Image (tube, chains in turn yellow, purple):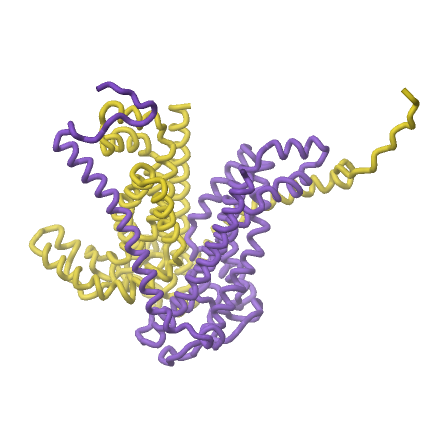
Length: 327
Length: 298
Protein backbone atom coordinates (compact mmCIF):
# COMPACT_ATOMS: atom_id res chain seq x y z
CA UNK A 1 0.00 0.00 0.00
CA UNK A 2 1.44 3.28 -0.93
CA UNK A 3 0.57 6.34 0.97
CA UNK A 4 -1.99 8.26 -0.89
CA UNK A 5 -2.91 11.82 -0.66
CA UNK A 6 -5.86 12.41 1.61
CA UNK A 7 -9.03 12.34 -0.47
CA UNK A 8 -10.11 15.65 -1.66
CA UNK A 9 -12.81 17.27 0.35
CA UNK A 10 -16.15 16.60 -1.36
CA UNK A 11 -17.55 19.60 -3.17
CA UNK A 12 -19.94 21.64 -1.13
CA UNK A 13 -23.42 20.33 -1.74
CA UNK A 14 -26.33 22.28 -0.42
CA UNK A 15 -28.51 19.59 1.01
CA UNK A 16 -30.74 22.14 2.63
CA UNK A 17 -29.07 22.09 6.01
CA UNK A 18 -28.36 25.77 6.29
CA UNK A 19 -30.30 28.08 8.53
CA UNK A 20 -31.74 29.82 5.51
CA UNK A 21 -33.03 26.51 4.27
CA UNK A 22 -34.52 25.73 7.65
CA UNK A 23 -36.43 28.97 7.49
CA UNK A 24 -37.58 28.09 4.00
CA UNK A 25 -38.77 24.76 5.32
CA UNK A 26 -40.79 26.44 8.06
CA UNK A 27 -42.15 28.96 5.58
CA UNK A 28 -43.13 26.20 3.18
CA UNK A 29 -44.93 24.30 5.92
CA UNK A 30 -46.88 27.43 6.75
CA UNK A 31 -47.65 28.07 3.09
CA UNK A 32 -49.09 24.61 2.40
CA UNK A 33 -51.05 24.64 5.66
CA UNK A 34 -52.52 27.99 4.63
CA UNK A 35 -53.43 26.56 1.22
CA UNK A 36 -55.14 23.65 2.95
CA UNK A 37 -57.01 26.00 5.24
CA UNK A 38 -58.27 27.98 2.22
CA UNK A 39 -61.06 25.42 1.87
CA UNK A 40 -62.28 26.09 5.38
CA UNK A 41 -61.82 29.85 5.01
CA UNK A 42 -63.79 29.99 1.76
CA UNK A 43 -66.61 27.83 3.14
CA UNK A 44 -66.77 29.99 6.27
CA UNK A 45 -66.71 33.21 4.24
CA UNK A 46 -69.48 31.94 1.98
CA UNK A 47 -71.70 31.29 4.97
CA UNK A 48 -70.93 34.56 6.78
CA UNK A 49 -70.94 37.07 3.91
CA UNK A 50 -74.05 35.75 2.19
CA UNK A 51 -75.96 35.44 5.48
CA UNK A 52 -75.11 39.00 6.44
CA UNK A 53 -76.15 40.29 3.02
CA UNK A 54 -79.41 38.32 3.07
CA UNK A 55 -80.35 39.22 6.64
CA UNK A 56 -82.43 42.37 5.88
CA UNK A 57 -84.72 40.33 3.61
CA UNK A 58 -84.99 37.41 6.03
CA UNK A 59 -85.47 39.68 9.06
CA UNK A 60 -88.61 41.21 7.55
CA UNK A 61 -90.41 38.09 8.65
CA UNK A 62 -88.28 34.98 9.24
CA UNK A 63 -91.31 32.69 9.64
CA UNK A 64 -92.84 33.98 6.43
CA UNK A 65 -89.48 33.59 4.66
CA UNK A 66 -89.30 29.89 5.50
CA UNK A 67 -92.95 28.85 5.34
CA UNK A 68 -94.71 31.42 3.16
CA UNK A 69 -95.72 30.55 -0.39
CA UNK A 70 -96.30 34.11 -1.58
CA UNK A 71 -93.31 35.61 -3.39
CA UNK A 72 -93.96 39.17 -4.46
CA UNK A 73 -90.79 41.29 -4.65
CA UNK A 74 -92.73 44.46 -5.51
CA UNK A 75 -94.67 44.19 -2.20
CA UNK A 76 -91.55 43.05 -0.33
CA UNK A 77 -93.20 39.73 0.51
CA UNK A 78 -90.66 36.92 0.38
CA UNK A 79 -92.08 33.47 1.08
CA UNK A 80 -89.72 30.80 -0.20
CA UNK A 81 -91.62 27.62 0.64
CA UNK A 82 -92.83 27.18 -2.94
CA UNK A 83 -89.23 27.06 -4.15
CA UNK A 84 -88.18 24.64 -1.41
CA UNK A 85 -91.12 22.45 -2.41
CA UNK A 86 -90.08 22.61 -6.07
CA UNK A 87 -86.50 21.67 -5.19
CA UNK A 88 -87.67 18.69 -3.15
CA UNK A 89 -90.20 17.47 -5.74
CA UNK A 90 -87.84 17.71 -8.72
CA UNK A 91 -85.02 16.06 -6.75
CA UNK A 92 -87.28 13.21 -5.65
CA UNK A 93 -88.39 12.60 -9.25
CA UNK A 94 -84.73 12.68 -10.31
CA UNK A 95 -83.78 10.17 -7.60
CA UNK A 96 -86.64 7.78 -8.45
CA UNK A 97 -85.36 7.65 -12.02
CA UNK A 98 -81.61 7.98 -11.53
CA UNK A 99 -80.89 5.65 -8.60
CA UNK A 100 -82.14 2.37 -10.16
CA UNK A 101 -80.65 3.27 -13.55
CA UNK A 102 -77.27 4.17 -12.03
CA UNK A 103 -77.13 1.02 -9.92
CA UNK A 104 -78.05 -0.96 -13.04
CA UNK A 105 -75.23 0.65 -15.02
CA UNK A 106 -72.76 0.06 -12.20
CA UNK A 107 -73.82 -3.61 -12.00
CA UNK A 108 -73.54 -3.92 -15.76
CA UNK A 109 -70.02 -2.52 -15.69
CA UNK A 110 -68.80 -4.61 -12.74
CA UNK A 111 -70.65 -7.90 -13.26
CA UNK A 112 -72.11 -8.28 -16.74
CA UNK A 113 -70.02 -6.43 -19.29
CA UNK A 114 -67.06 -7.93 -21.05
CA UNK A 115 -63.78 -6.34 -20.02
CA UNK A 116 -63.45 -4.59 -23.37
CA UNK A 117 -67.06 -3.38 -23.48
CA UNK A 118 -66.60 -2.07 -19.96
CA UNK A 119 -64.28 0.72 -21.11
CA UNK A 120 -66.80 2.03 -23.65
CA UNK A 121 -69.61 2.15 -21.11
CA UNK A 122 -67.41 3.98 -18.62
CA UNK A 123 -66.58 6.46 -21.40
CA UNK A 124 -70.28 7.01 -22.13
CA UNK A 125 -70.98 7.77 -18.47
CA UNK A 126 -67.92 10.05 -18.25
CA UNK A 127 -69.02 11.92 -21.36
CA UNK A 128 -72.45 12.40 -19.82
CA UNK A 129 -70.71 14.06 -16.88
CA UNK A 130 -68.73 16.44 -19.11
CA UNK A 131 -71.77 17.88 -20.96
CA UNK A 132 -72.30 21.36 -19.47
CA UNK A 133 -75.60 21.68 -17.64
CA UNK A 134 -76.70 24.62 -19.78
CA UNK A 135 -76.55 22.35 -22.85
CA UNK A 136 -78.90 19.87 -21.16
CA UNK A 137 -81.18 22.83 -20.48
CA UNK A 138 -80.99 23.95 -24.10
CA UNK A 139 -81.80 20.50 -25.50
CA UNK A 140 -84.51 20.07 -22.86
CA UNK A 141 -86.24 23.37 -23.49
CA UNK A 142 -86.14 23.42 -27.28
CA UNK A 143 -86.15 19.73 -28.33
CA UNK A 144 -87.51 17.66 -25.48
CA UNK A 145 -90.46 19.79 -24.36
CA UNK A 146 -92.41 19.68 -27.67
CA UNK A 147 -91.89 15.90 -27.68
CA UNK A 148 -93.02 15.17 -24.14
CA UNK A 149 -96.01 17.53 -23.90
CA UNK A 150 -98.38 15.18 -25.83
CA UNK A 151 -97.11 12.25 -23.74
CA UNK A 152 -97.95 14.15 -20.54
CA UNK A 153 -101.42 15.01 -21.90
CA UNK A 154 -102.03 11.38 -22.87
CA UNK A 155 -100.89 10.12 -19.47
CA UNK A 156 -103.00 12.61 -17.50
CA UNK A 157 -105.97 11.39 -19.55
CA UNK A 158 -105.16 7.76 -18.74
CA UNK A 159 -104.94 8.29 -14.97
CA UNK A 160 -107.81 10.78 -14.78
CA UNK A 161 -110.26 8.24 -13.26
CA UNK A 162 -107.74 7.05 -10.63
CA UNK A 163 -108.08 8.99 -7.37
CA UNK A 164 -104.76 10.17 -5.98
CA UNK A 165 -102.86 9.66 -9.21
CA UNK A 166 -105.04 12.19 -11.00
CA UNK A 167 -103.98 14.83 -8.49
CA UNK A 168 -100.31 14.08 -9.13
CA UNK A 169 -100.62 13.81 -12.92
CA UNK A 170 -103.31 16.38 -13.67
CA UNK A 171 -104.15 18.07 -16.95
CA UNK A 172 -101.41 20.11 -18.54
CA UNK A 173 -100.85 22.37 -21.48
CA UNK A 174 -97.10 22.81 -21.14
CA UNK A 175 -94.04 20.63 -21.00
CA UNK A 176 -92.28 23.18 -18.80
CA UNK A 177 -93.02 21.60 -15.43
CA UNK A 178 -91.69 19.79 -12.37
CA UNK A 179 -91.61 16.45 -14.16
CA UNK A 180 -89.47 17.57 -17.10
CA UNK A 181 -87.07 19.26 -14.68
CA UNK A 182 -86.89 16.03 -12.66
CA UNK A 183 -86.09 13.97 -15.77
CA UNK A 184 -83.28 16.31 -16.81
CA UNK A 185 -81.90 16.30 -13.27
CA UNK A 186 -81.97 12.50 -13.35
CA UNK A 187 -79.74 12.46 -16.43
CA UNK A 188 -77.34 14.84 -14.72
CA UNK A 189 -77.18 12.76 -11.53
CA UNK A 190 -76.55 9.43 -13.25
CA UNK A 191 -72.78 9.89 -13.71
CA UNK A 192 -72.03 10.71 -10.07
CA UNK A 193 -74.26 7.98 -8.62
CA UNK A 194 -72.86 5.44 -11.10
CA UNK A 195 -69.24 6.21 -10.37
CA UNK A 196 -69.67 5.99 -6.58
CA UNK A 197 -71.78 2.81 -6.88
CA UNK A 198 -69.01 1.27 -8.97
CA UNK A 199 -66.47 2.06 -6.27
CA UNK A 200 -68.79 0.52 -3.71
CA UNK A 201 -69.32 -2.65 -5.75
CA UNK A 202 -65.59 -2.96 -6.26
CA UNK A 203 -65.18 -3.43 -2.50
CA UNK A 204 -67.37 -6.56 -2.45
CA UNK A 205 -64.91 -9.41 -1.84
CA UNK A 206 -64.56 -11.89 -4.70
CA UNK A 207 -64.86 -14.70 -2.20
CA UNK A 208 -68.45 -13.67 -1.43
CA UNK A 209 -69.39 -13.69 -5.10
CA UNK A 210 -67.69 -17.02 -5.75
CA UNK A 211 -69.29 -18.47 -2.65
CA UNK A 212 -72.70 -17.52 -3.99
CA UNK A 213 -71.91 -19.06 -7.35
CA UNK A 214 -70.58 -22.20 -5.65
CA UNK A 215 -73.92 -22.59 -3.89
CA UNK A 216 -75.55 -22.67 -7.31
CA UNK A 217 -76.86 -19.12 -7.42
CA UNK A 218 -77.64 -17.51 -10.74
CA UNK A 219 -76.00 -14.17 -11.48
CA UNK A 220 -79.10 -12.28 -10.32
CA UNK A 221 -79.28 -14.33 -7.12
CA UNK A 222 -75.59 -13.64 -6.54
CA UNK A 223 -76.23 -9.88 -7.01
CA UNK A 224 -79.21 -10.01 -4.66
CA UNK A 225 -77.53 -12.18 -2.05
CA UNK A 226 -73.89 -11.10 -2.08
CA UNK A 227 -73.47 -7.69 -3.70
CA UNK A 228 -76.49 -5.62 -2.73
CA UNK A 229 -76.61 -6.39 1.03
CA UNK A 230 -72.88 -5.76 1.22
CA UNK A 231 -73.09 -2.41 -0.59
CA UNK A 232 -76.32 -1.03 0.85
CA UNK A 233 -74.72 1.67 3.00
CA UNK A 234 -72.48 2.84 0.19
CA UNK A 235 -75.38 3.00 -2.22
CA UNK A 236 -77.34 5.17 0.22
CA UNK A 237 -74.36 7.52 0.37
CA UNK A 238 -74.04 7.56 -3.43
CA UNK A 239 -77.72 8.41 -3.81
CA UNK A 240 -77.41 11.23 -1.29
CA UNK A 241 -74.50 12.71 -3.25
CA UNK A 242 -76.69 12.57 -6.35
CA UNK A 243 -79.49 14.23 -4.38
CA UNK A 244 -77.14 17.05 -3.38
CA UNK A 245 -76.21 17.56 -7.01
CA UNK A 246 -79.86 17.57 -8.09
CA UNK A 247 -80.89 20.11 -5.47
CA UNK A 248 -78.15 22.56 -6.41
CA UNK A 249 -78.54 22.35 -10.18
CA UNK A 250 -79.49 25.75 -11.50
CA UNK A 251 -79.37 26.48 -15.17
CA UNK A 252 -80.86 23.36 -16.73
CA UNK A 253 -83.80 23.59 -14.33
CA UNK A 254 -84.23 27.33 -14.90
CA UNK A 255 -84.71 26.66 -18.62
CA UNK A 256 -87.32 23.90 -18.32
CA UNK A 257 -89.35 24.40 -15.14
CA UNK A 258 -91.55 27.28 -16.27
CA UNK A 259 -91.04 29.73 -13.43
CA UNK A 260 -94.41 29.62 -11.67
CA UNK A 261 -94.62 30.58 -8.01
CA UNK A 262 -96.30 28.53 -5.32
CA UNK A 263 -97.00 24.92 -4.42
CA UNK A 264 -98.71 22.60 -6.86
CA UNK A 265 -99.35 18.89 -6.34
CA UNK A 266 -99.64 18.43 -10.10
CA UNK A 267 -96.27 17.22 -11.40
CA UNK A 268 -97.27 18.43 -14.86
CA UNK A 269 -97.68 22.02 -13.67
CA UNK A 270 -95.00 24.70 -13.95
CA UNK A 271 -93.12 25.55 -10.76
CA UNK A 272 -89.74 26.75 -9.65
CA UNK A 273 -86.81 25.60 -7.54
CA UNK A 274 -84.56 27.49 -5.15
CA UNK A 275 -81.53 27.51 -7.42
CA UNK A 276 -83.52 28.20 -10.61
CA UNK A 277 -85.40 31.19 -9.23
CA UNK A 278 -82.11 32.90 -8.38
CA UNK A 279 -80.88 32.53 -11.97
CA UNK A 280 -84.21 33.59 -13.46
CA UNK A 281 -84.82 36.70 -11.37
CA UNK A 282 -81.23 37.83 -10.82
CA UNK A 283 -81.09 40.12 -13.85
CA UNK A 284 -84.18 42.12 -12.92
CA UNK A 285 -83.62 42.22 -9.17
CA UNK A 286 -82.34 45.00 -6.97
CA UNK A 287 -82.19 46.05 -3.34
CA UNK A 288 -84.19 43.84 -1.01
CA UNK A 289 -85.20 41.51 -3.87
CA UNK A 290 -81.53 40.69 -4.48
CA UNK A 291 -81.01 40.14 -0.75
CA UNK A 292 -83.97 37.76 -0.67
CA UNK A 293 -82.55 35.79 -3.61
CA UNK A 294 -79.24 35.56 -1.75
CA UNK A 295 -81.25 34.38 1.27
CA UNK A 296 -82.63 31.53 -0.83
CA UNK A 297 -79.04 30.74 -1.73
CA UNK A 298 -78.05 30.61 1.95
CA UNK A 299 -80.91 28.19 2.64
CA UNK A 300 -79.88 26.04 -0.33
CA UNK A 301 -76.25 26.15 0.78
CA UNK A 302 -77.18 24.94 4.26
CA UNK A 303 -79.31 22.09 2.90
CA UNK A 304 -76.78 20.87 0.33
CA UNK A 305 -73.83 21.10 2.73
CA UNK A 306 -75.78 19.07 5.28
CA UNK A 307 -76.73 16.42 2.72
CA UNK A 308 -73.21 16.21 1.31
CA UNK A 309 -71.69 15.99 4.77
CA UNK A 310 -74.06 13.18 5.80
CA UNK A 311 -73.45 11.39 2.50
CA UNK A 312 -69.69 11.47 2.99
CA UNK A 313 -70.07 10.17 6.54
CA UNK A 314 -72.34 7.36 5.33
CA UNK A 315 -69.98 6.38 2.50
CA UNK A 316 -66.94 6.46 4.76
CA UNK A 317 -68.64 4.45 7.49
CA UNK A 318 -69.79 1.88 4.92
CA UNK A 319 -66.22 1.61 3.61
CA UNK A 320 -64.83 1.06 7.10
CA UNK A 321 -67.45 -1.61 7.83
CA UNK A 322 -66.65 -3.44 4.61
CA UNK A 323 -62.93 -3.38 5.22
CA UNK A 324 -63.41 -4.38 8.84
CA UNK A 325 -65.47 -7.42 7.95
CA UNK A 326 -62.95 -8.92 5.57
CA UNK A 327 -59.49 -7.68 6.42
CA UNK B 1 -70.18 -34.34 -12.10
CA UNK B 2 -68.03 -32.85 -9.40
CA UNK B 3 -65.19 -31.34 -11.37
CA UNK B 4 -63.56 -28.37 -9.71
CA UNK B 5 -62.55 -25.42 -11.81
CA UNK B 6 -60.16 -23.54 -9.58
CA UNK B 7 -61.37 -19.97 -9.28
CA UNK B 8 -63.82 -19.98 -12.22
CA UNK B 9 -67.43 -20.52 -11.22
CA UNK B 10 -68.76 -24.03 -11.79
CA UNK B 11 -71.04 -24.90 -14.67
CA UNK B 12 -74.00 -22.57 -14.53
CA UNK B 13 -75.32 -23.13 -18.02
CA UNK B 14 -78.78 -23.11 -16.51
CA UNK B 15 -79.90 -26.45 -17.91
CA UNK B 16 -81.07 -27.57 -14.50
CA UNK B 17 -82.51 -24.22 -13.40
CA UNK B 18 -86.18 -23.96 -12.68
CA UNK B 19 -88.10 -21.80 -15.11
CA UNK B 20 -88.83 -19.18 -12.47
CA UNK B 21 -85.19 -18.75 -11.50
CA UNK B 22 -83.87 -18.61 -15.02
CA UNK B 23 -86.58 -16.13 -15.96
CA UNK B 24 -85.63 -13.92 -13.01
CA UNK B 25 -81.97 -14.10 -13.99
CA UNK B 26 -82.61 -13.36 -17.66
CA UNK B 27 -84.96 -10.45 -16.98
CA UNK B 28 -82.53 -8.99 -14.44
CA UNK B 29 -79.71 -9.11 -17.00
CA UNK B 30 -82.03 -7.53 -19.55
CA UNK B 31 -83.04 -4.81 -17.10
CA UNK B 32 -79.42 -4.05 -16.23
CA UNK B 33 -78.57 -3.79 -19.92
CA UNK B 34 -81.57 -1.52 -20.42
CA UNK B 35 -80.18 0.88 -17.80
CA UNK B 36 -77.07 1.38 -19.95
CA UNK B 37 -79.26 2.18 -22.93
CA UNK B 38 -81.27 4.66 -20.86
CA UNK B 39 -78.05 6.48 -20.00
CA UNK B 40 -76.73 6.37 -23.57
CA UNK B 41 -79.97 7.77 -24.99
CA UNK B 42 -79.72 11.34 -23.61
CA UNK B 43 -76.05 11.48 -24.57
CA UNK B 44 -76.90 10.48 -28.13
CA UNK B 45 -79.79 12.95 -28.21
CA UNK B 46 -77.61 15.82 -26.99
CA UNK B 47 -74.78 14.98 -29.38
CA UNK B 48 -77.10 14.62 -32.36
CA UNK B 49 -79.11 17.78 -31.68
CA UNK B 50 -76.15 19.99 -30.85
CA UNK B 51 -74.12 18.89 -33.85
CA UNK B 52 -76.97 18.93 -36.37
CA UNK B 53 -78.39 22.28 -35.24
CA UNK B 54 -75.15 23.97 -34.28
CA UNK B 55 -72.92 23.03 -37.20
CA UNK B 56 -74.73 25.32 -39.66
CA UNK B 57 -73.74 28.40 -37.64
CA UNK B 58 -70.04 27.65 -37.80
CA UNK B 59 -68.10 29.83 -40.17
CA UNK B 60 -65.09 32.08 -39.95
CA UNK B 61 -67.35 35.02 -39.04
CA UNK B 62 -68.86 32.99 -36.19
CA UNK B 63 -65.52 32.88 -34.41
CA UNK B 64 -64.45 36.49 -34.96
CA UNK B 65 -67.56 38.71 -35.26
CA UNK B 66 -69.02 40.52 -32.27
CA UNK B 67 -72.33 39.33 -30.85
CA UNK B 68 -75.47 40.93 -32.39
CA UNK B 69 -77.21 43.16 -29.87
CA UNK B 70 -80.72 42.23 -30.96
CA UNK B 71 -82.14 38.76 -30.41
CA UNK B 72 -83.96 38.97 -33.73
CA UNK B 73 -80.88 39.83 -35.76
CA UNK B 74 -79.81 36.81 -37.74
CA UNK B 75 -76.24 36.01 -38.43
CA UNK B 76 -73.03 35.00 -36.79
CA UNK B 77 -70.84 36.32 -34.07
CA UNK B 78 -69.73 34.68 -30.86
CA UNK B 79 -66.12 35.87 -30.78
CA UNK B 80 -66.31 37.86 -27.52
CA UNK B 81 -67.94 34.92 -25.73
CA UNK B 82 -65.25 32.50 -26.94
CA UNK B 83 -62.49 34.86 -25.79
CA UNK B 84 -64.37 35.49 -22.54
CA UNK B 85 -64.71 31.77 -21.83
CA UNK B 86 -61.03 31.13 -22.42
CA UNK B 87 -59.74 34.15 -20.51
CA UNK B 88 -62.06 33.80 -17.51
CA UNK B 89 -61.49 30.05 -17.22
CA UNK B 90 -57.76 30.55 -17.68
CA UNK B 91 -57.63 33.13 -14.90
CA UNK B 92 -59.66 30.81 -12.66
CA UNK B 93 -57.15 28.03 -13.34
CA UNK B 94 -54.28 30.37 -12.55
CA UNK B 95 -55.86 31.24 -9.21
CA UNK B 96 -57.07 27.83 -8.10
CA UNK B 97 -54.47 25.33 -9.33
CA UNK B 98 -51.46 26.61 -7.31
CA UNK B 99 -53.54 26.89 -4.13
CA UNK B 100 -55.18 23.55 -4.78
CA UNK B 101 -51.88 21.75 -5.39
CA UNK B 102 -50.30 23.26 -2.27
CA UNK B 103 -53.39 22.37 -0.27
CA UNK B 104 -53.13 18.79 -1.47
CA UNK B 105 -49.44 18.79 -0.48
CA UNK B 106 -50.52 19.79 3.00
CA UNK B 107 -53.12 17.01 3.18
CA UNK B 108 -50.89 14.23 1.87
CA UNK B 109 -47.38 15.25 3.03
CA UNK B 110 -47.94 17.18 6.24
CA UNK B 111 -51.44 16.70 7.64
CA UNK B 112 -51.90 13.00 6.79
CA UNK B 113 -54.25 11.64 9.44
CA UNK B 114 -54.25 14.57 11.83
CA UNK B 115 -57.75 15.66 12.82
CA UNK B 116 -57.34 19.00 11.01
CA UNK B 117 -56.31 17.31 7.74
CA UNK B 118 -59.16 14.82 7.99
CA UNK B 119 -61.57 17.68 8.57
CA UNK B 120 -60.21 19.64 5.59
CA UNK B 121 -60.50 16.52 3.43
CA UNK B 122 -64.15 16.05 4.38
CA UNK B 123 -64.93 19.74 3.88
CA UNK B 124 -63.23 19.70 0.45
CA UNK B 125 -65.54 16.83 -0.49
CA UNK B 126 -68.47 18.80 0.87
CA UNK B 127 -67.32 21.87 -1.07
CA UNK B 128 -67.43 19.94 -4.36
CA UNK B 129 -71.13 19.49 -3.62
CA UNK B 130 -71.86 23.17 -2.99
CA UNK B 131 -74.15 24.42 -5.77
CA UNK B 132 -72.20 26.44 -8.32
CA UNK B 133 -74.62 29.36 -8.07
CA UNK B 134 -73.63 29.73 -4.42
CA UNK B 135 -70.04 30.49 -5.47
CA UNK B 136 -71.46 33.19 -7.72
CA UNK B 137 -73.54 34.70 -4.91
CA UNK B 138 -70.51 34.60 -2.60
CA UNK B 139 -68.29 36.47 -5.04
CA UNK B 140 -71.13 38.89 -5.80
CA UNK B 141 -71.47 39.76 -2.11
CA UNK B 142 -67.78 39.62 -1.26
CA UNK B 143 -66.27 41.22 -4.39
CA UNK B 144 -68.77 42.70 -6.86
CA UNK B 145 -70.64 44.79 -4.25
CA UNK B 146 -67.30 45.96 -2.87
CA UNK B 147 -65.80 47.19 -6.15
CA UNK B 148 -69.31 48.05 -7.40
CA UNK B 149 -68.75 46.61 -10.85
CA UNK B 150 -69.39 43.28 -12.54
CA UNK B 151 -66.17 42.13 -14.16
CA UNK B 152 -64.70 39.08 -15.80
CA UNK B 153 -62.33 38.78 -12.87
CA UNK B 154 -65.28 38.29 -10.50
CA UNK B 155 -66.37 35.37 -12.67
CA UNK B 156 -62.84 33.98 -12.56
CA UNK B 157 -62.89 34.19 -8.75
CA UNK B 158 -66.21 32.32 -8.60
CA UNK B 159 -64.96 29.60 -10.96
CA UNK B 160 -61.75 29.35 -8.93
CA UNK B 161 -63.81 28.64 -5.78
CA UNK B 162 -65.58 25.94 -7.76
CA UNK B 163 -62.35 24.37 -9.03
CA UNK B 164 -60.40 24.52 -5.78
CA UNK B 165 -61.85 21.42 -4.06
CA UNK B 166 -61.72 19.39 -7.28
CA UNK B 167 -58.04 20.24 -7.79
CA UNK B 168 -57.23 19.48 -4.13
CA UNK B 169 -58.88 16.07 -4.12
CA UNK B 170 -57.58 14.92 -7.51
CA UNK B 171 -54.04 16.12 -6.71
CA UNK B 172 -54.13 14.36 -3.36
CA UNK B 173 -55.08 11.10 -5.08
CA UNK B 174 -52.06 11.53 -7.37
CA UNK B 175 -49.66 12.37 -4.52
CA UNK B 176 -50.81 9.22 -2.75
CA UNK B 177 -49.64 7.19 -5.75
CA UNK B 178 -46.07 8.49 -5.45
CA UNK B 179 -44.07 5.65 -3.87
CA UNK B 180 -42.74 6.34 -0.37
CA UNK B 181 -39.29 5.08 -1.42
CA UNK B 182 -38.82 8.28 -3.41
CA UNK B 183 -39.50 10.41 -0.34
CA UNK B 184 -37.23 8.27 1.81
CA UNK B 185 -34.43 8.36 -0.74
CA UNK B 186 -34.67 12.14 -0.90
CA UNK B 187 -34.69 12.42 2.88
CA UNK B 188 -31.78 10.01 3.04
CA UNK B 189 -29.74 12.34 0.87
CA UNK B 190 -30.36 15.00 3.47
CA UNK B 191 -32.91 17.05 1.61
CA UNK B 192 -35.32 19.02 3.68
CA UNK B 193 -39.00 18.32 3.36
CA UNK B 194 -39.82 21.27 1.14
CA UNK B 195 -37.05 20.19 -1.24
CA UNK B 196 -38.39 16.65 -1.26
CA UNK B 197 -41.86 17.94 -2.07
CA UNK B 198 -40.85 20.46 -4.72
CA UNK B 199 -38.03 18.43 -6.26
CA UNK B 200 -39.24 14.85 -6.00
CA UNK B 201 -42.87 14.36 -5.07
CA UNK B 202 -44.53 17.01 -7.25
CA UNK B 203 -42.48 16.23 -10.39
CA UNK B 204 -43.26 12.52 -9.96
CA UNK B 205 -46.96 13.29 -9.84
CA UNK B 206 -46.91 16.13 -12.37
CA UNK B 207 -48.77 14.49 -15.22
CA UNK B 208 -51.47 13.18 -12.90
CA UNK B 209 -51.88 16.64 -11.40
CA UNK B 210 -52.06 18.19 -14.87
CA UNK B 211 -54.69 15.69 -15.93
CA UNK B 212 -56.85 16.34 -12.87
CA UNK B 213 -56.49 20.10 -13.26
CA UNK B 214 -57.49 19.97 -16.92
CA UNK B 215 -60.61 18.06 -15.92
CA UNK B 216 -61.43 20.78 -13.39
CA UNK B 217 -60.87 23.41 -16.10
CA UNK B 218 -63.22 21.53 -18.44
CA UNK B 219 -65.89 21.50 -15.76
CA UNK B 220 -65.45 25.20 -14.97
CA UNK B 221 -65.57 26.23 -18.64
CA UNK B 222 -69.13 24.93 -18.90
CA UNK B 223 -70.43 26.62 -15.76
CA UNK B 224 -73.20 29.14 -16.25
CA UNK B 225 -74.78 30.04 -12.93
CA UNK B 226 -71.79 31.77 -11.28
CA UNK B 227 -71.09 33.65 -14.51
CA UNK B 228 -74.54 35.18 -14.93
CA UNK B 229 -74.46 36.32 -11.30
CA UNK B 230 -71.03 37.95 -11.31
CA UNK B 231 -69.94 38.79 -14.86
CA UNK B 232 -72.79 40.79 -16.36
CA UNK B 233 -73.11 41.03 -20.12
CA UNK B 234 -71.31 42.48 -23.11
CA UNK B 235 -71.44 42.19 -26.88
CA UNK B 236 -67.91 43.32 -27.64
CA UNK B 237 -64.43 41.94 -27.07
CA UNK B 238 -63.22 42.38 -23.48
CA UNK B 239 -59.86 40.69 -23.13
CA UNK B 240 -59.13 42.78 -20.00
CA UNK B 241 -60.79 40.98 -17.09
CA UNK B 242 -60.82 44.09 -14.90
CA UNK B 243 -62.51 46.27 -17.50
CA UNK B 244 -66.22 45.97 -16.78
CA UNK B 245 -68.79 43.37 -17.77
CA UNK B 246 -67.77 40.33 -19.78
CA UNK B 247 -69.49 37.28 -21.22
CA UNK B 248 -68.93 33.55 -21.81
CA UNK B 249 -70.33 30.91 -24.14
CA UNK B 250 -72.36 29.28 -21.38
CA UNK B 251 -73.97 32.60 -20.42
CA UNK B 252 -74.77 33.28 -24.08
CA UNK B 253 -76.45 29.86 -24.43
CA UNK B 254 -78.62 30.58 -21.39
CA UNK B 255 -79.62 34.04 -22.62
CA UNK B 256 -80.34 33.01 -26.18
CA UNK B 257 -82.08 29.74 -25.32
CA UNK B 258 -84.71 31.51 -23.23
CA UNK B 259 -85.76 33.70 -26.18
CA UNK B 260 -88.53 32.63 -28.58
CA UNK B 261 -86.76 33.96 -31.69
CA UNK B 262 -85.24 31.57 -34.22
CA UNK B 263 -82.18 33.74 -34.76
CA UNK B 264 -81.20 33.74 -31.08
CA UNK B 265 -81.94 30.02 -30.70
CA UNK B 266 -79.65 29.32 -33.65
CA UNK B 267 -76.93 31.25 -31.89
CA UNK B 268 -77.59 29.24 -28.74
CA UNK B 269 -77.04 25.99 -30.65
CA UNK B 270 -73.90 27.31 -32.27
CA UNK B 271 -72.57 28.44 -28.89
CA UNK B 272 -73.44 25.02 -27.42
CA UNK B 273 -71.46 23.26 -30.13
CA UNK B 274 -68.52 25.62 -29.60
CA UNK B 275 -68.64 25.16 -25.82
CA UNK B 276 -68.85 21.37 -26.08
CA UNK B 277 -65.90 21.42 -28.48
CA UNK B 278 -63.84 23.40 -25.96
CA UNK B 279 -64.87 21.20 -23.02
CA UNK B 280 -64.11 18.01 -24.97
CA UNK B 281 -60.75 19.40 -26.02
CA UNK B 282 -59.77 19.84 -22.37
CA UNK B 283 -61.19 16.42 -21.45
CA UNK B 284 -59.32 14.64 -24.23
CA UNK B 285 -56.15 16.53 -23.37
CA UNK B 286 -56.59 15.36 -19.79
CA UNK B 287 -57.01 11.74 -20.96
CA UNK B 288 -53.85 11.93 -23.07
CA UNK B 289 -51.83 13.35 -20.19
CA UNK B 290 -53.28 10.72 -17.84
CA UNK B 291 -52.37 7.92 -20.27
CA UNK B 292 -48.79 9.15 -20.27
CA UNK B 293 -48.86 9.05 -16.50
CA UNK B 294 -49.82 5.38 -16.56
CA UNK B 295 -46.73 4.65 -18.64
CA UNK B 296 -44.58 6.63 -16.23
CA UNK B 297 -45.74 4.50 -13.38
CA UNK B 298 -44.82 1.20 -14.98
